Length: 324
Length: 298
Image: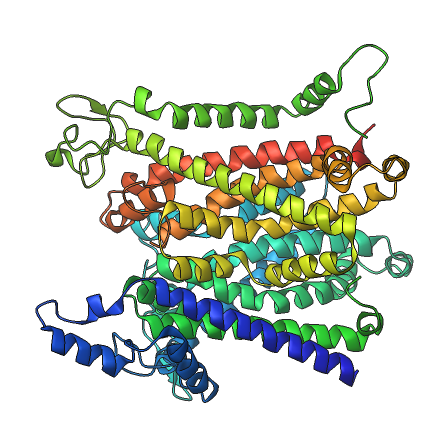
């Protein structure tokens, strides 16, 4: 077990190192931030002074070395635009994204599980087919497109819900949250539903195949033989048994939701880290882009690492066998 | 499994494939809609009422006219955008960019991923492990994140978008073809080919590859839709294709700002075009999966 953990950990470290080089070297090549940050009227001496101050005059590997040694101490450089630490900006924006992501996952469970169960129970009826067609659409339509339709329908035509921003927030333990005010909830609803659509489709599929499988089990036959009501069989015995895979998969998908929040946040002008990333790319704010990408990549590597370790505890074949 | 089985009544495999495919009417509709879209994209310069990127043809005063408005020289059936460009023409030109980016990136990814997967499956051992490790690693990150990293790394431009889309997709093809090839490799015809001491290149590309292609075609069709959708998303975020060659995603982004003021059409119609494209490809891909799936074959 220890050997497996160490091997897996060193793999993660290598991946993180490679990713950091790709991200840093790549972002370096986007463009010259000097052009954007320095007043074009400034003379050469002034430009050179600014470059020196930002460390942009040094060779790229020196910049990378300085960047890595700082990064390991939690310092990812100052934003060129805001002139405060990049990590600080991201941490300040993170709660908005997490709020959106958790609500989206909540929607996926609340809407996806019942719909999937209906589709599994009434597979051949029109309603089952309609749900499955809907889930195919949820998989294939681009998130931003659905977001636009939401805005067009619910904000512009009907005027029911606001189209952008976060609304009134309340501080909980010093962190601003939207879901405790009516205004905040009305702002949160559309983006969260938009972000959830893909996951709802996924949960519908999982819940449907789970329901079909569970219905054939002996304990369901036994429950029926005992004379339990249909509601109790479906609401307790079937539901409990299909929830395990659904929750496992959604836990794994949380990182994915955060990555996809980039799109939803841009559509709904939600002030989270995804919107921050797109704005920073547009402004050539290199440290913020690097910090965002590194943070997200690290998060994924961590999630994958934890999942692998958990699997190897549950299933010893994973750590004994190789890749196949 | 595929090409060699000719039925007694003289029906060629291709005919049988076509009649199988046509059993699902919706898939046929999807196919013809898609052909129509390709036609519109290829012949856009000849069939559109206006070249939206020729400044002499557009009238700035015609900006943001509602659908059906009559301009000086032509009727704008789908309205105009903020620059006074006819939206219908803009959509046809946008389709050109969207479809070609989707198709080119899919073809490159298919060849790259397909070859790597075949090589891995045929030679096995270290080569296989390395290729599959990289593929697994990449698949553990969501496509949008990989694309964001690459686009912010490479910068903008059609070629950069294509590189990003190839990088996102190749692993699917490598995985798909590898799993088929591992099964095929153990069959007798492969053993025979090996015994005849034919060189590796010939075995891999002449014997192994043709028998591994059906699943690859299915994955490829669905992936074209994914590629188009991902390109549209990146362009909508403003980090995709350049404004000189707008795709449907970029047209939607351009109209987005006017949506809240009620000028819905600038975004809406390109969005509908994108929707029709993606759904029609998926309908065809779905049917292909059913027809080409050996397990479902009669």
